[in-house]
Image (cartoon, rainbow, N blue to C red; front, side, top):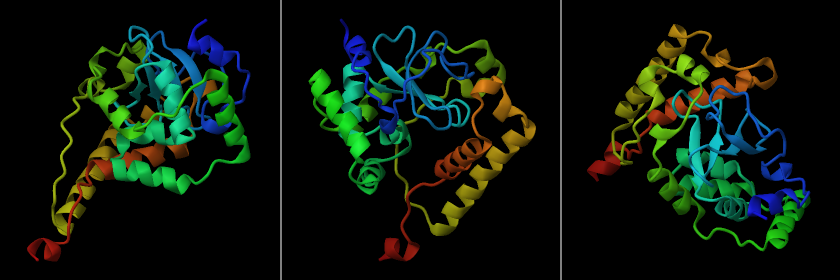
Length: 247
């Protein structure tokens, strides 16, 4: 019996940890072709799955992300995926790790506070039922997995190819660098990023609804919230005050 089969046989409600059980298939246009869904976050259509052709690698799919940024690998195996869940006491931080640096990741975990009684019971049931231990360096592990992953080999459906502009289907992932700019330059970058995003959606007014069935449409609030979040973040390099730089 595989670890995944043992996990299914635990019959524990993991919805409080962001791993709600549901259908093993997803009708979202951005779910990779042939993916097997493991569980659902319960918000914005986020789900976790095995992607055909990638073995035991567990990936997150977030339909409310920007084009070309829907799928991210989280763990090389289902065991490591569960160890990440144990370490972070849920999957919220794990799913968003690709957006954050280590400082932001750690801050989120601190602000999340101690788990509720329901979450703690689910965590203990998972740990004791499968004999697993929490991942030691969750952020470092996720970053390593994503840095070595070939996003260009993800098999997408025809709906995805019809909806997403060609230039965004196989996004390159540039090396992460930190730049220090003035406050004025930072404001210019943010304005330019939001303007570019607005132009895209003005040109593609029906994009948020493209390729989704009625039963699996995400909330418009969640979609536009993530749109603005990504827009601002893409134009937000770290900076120091000019006076501090000169001093």
